[in-house]
Each structure stands twice: as structure tokens, then as C-alpha cells.
Length: 285
Image (cartoon, rainbow, N blue to C red; front, top):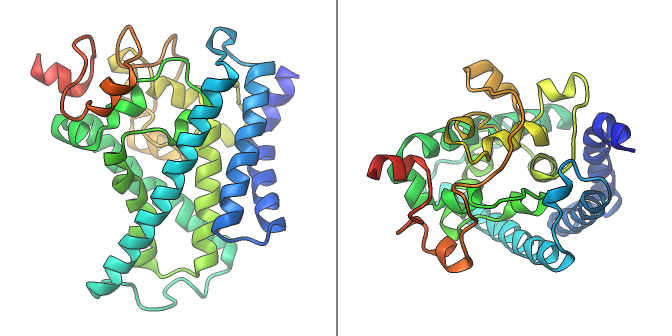
């Protein structure tokens, strides 16, 4: 079972998410339903065959995280829509049909990798500049021990604008058909859930292009130097190309020896825990 998951889960989960989305007729509601189905499947697998058994979470904690991630996912969609309207009001929208004439598969691939390339540089800047780390509240996303698929969508509300920006910006610049934007967003959402799950995935060839759980777990490492690698949440190809790829697994995730409480998480843009080790705390120290 573990070997099947290791070699086959990644492509099967992505293909299954796409097929379910199409069977549901497409659209934002289909994306949300697919989100819950994939999260449910990963919740079960992480209970049955986790890569790190000591990282198992209780059902109540898992469901709370899934609900929070779902709310934040919807919020990101709303913010992206507002950003799209903002580009239009400013007269910055791309000429209609700039890439809309491409085959839809080509549009989806371009949007998937292009949006992740934009976020790669945003993400890298967050980890480089203490002020951006604090303003974005990115420390919240990194604060969790025992990484779980539901953590993919759990961050500080301040960061939602930055998470919505890449696809909105790319769509504004390239002018794809709306269907391509939705499908690319679905695949990004599905892969980022897989990248955060407590399951081992190492599909040959695919792991050289798409981010796996082991690769992204290293980015969440509680060891500061390890965490400054593997910035691409979906296309590890960018880390390989730009020299920020880090191999090997991580013993523990988080930003310190303990996981901060809810109040500490919410105030993290203004005050980090005294035992945190981040780009901001190092600068302050």
C-alpha cells in the first residue's frame, strides 16, 4: 500500500481531481466540492498510512483545519475576482484573446507554471526580506508542527492578497479563456494540498517537475537553513532552475521548539514568539 501511494498517488490524485471537477460541470462550486473530496481522501490516507505516524492528527483537529482552509480558499477566490476588476478599472487588462486562441490544454499548462513562477519569486522575497515576512504574516503558515494536507490553505488573513495575486496578474497579462483559469487554479490547489500531506510521494519523472510532500516538508523545516529552499509550492522545476532546490527530508516542521497558540498566530505580523527562529527574528536578534 505504501509503495502504491509513493509511486502513484500524485498523478492519480491530480487526474482524479480534474475528472471530478469536469463531472460536476466545472465552475467555482465544482472546485470547492473537489477540494472537500480530495481533503477527505487525504485525511483518510494520512490516518491509515502516514509517512510519519507520530504526526497523526485527531479527527476534530483535522476537520477544523480543513474548514479553515476551505474558508480561506473561498476568500482567495473573492480577492482574485476583486483584483481582476481592479485591473479592468485601471485599464490594465490584456487585449482580449491574447492566448485565448491557444488549445485549452496549452493555456492551462501556461497558467499553472506561470502562476507558480510568479509566486516562487514572491515567496522567495518573503523569506528574504524581514519586513515582507512580517507584513504578510507568512510565519503563521510555517508555525505548524506535524504538517498535514489541510495546512496548505491555513495562513494569516494578511497573506491572502499575495496568494491571490499570481493567477490574477497572469490572467490580466495574457488574456486566457475563463475555463483555463479555473482548471489551472484547480490543479494548483490540488497539488498544493498534496505537497503538504503526511504521505510519501515520489513518482519517477514527475517529482522533477511538480513539488512533492517531501520536498515541501523541507521548506517547512524547523531548521532555518533548510527552510530557505524549495520555494515553489507546485512546480519544483523553478527551484531546480534557479538554484534553490534542497534535497532530503526534514525531522520537524515549524518555526521553533513549540507550536504557537491561536492568539500568538493571529498577532504574528506584529509580534513573533520569543522562541521563534525566522528571517525576522534573526534580523531583530
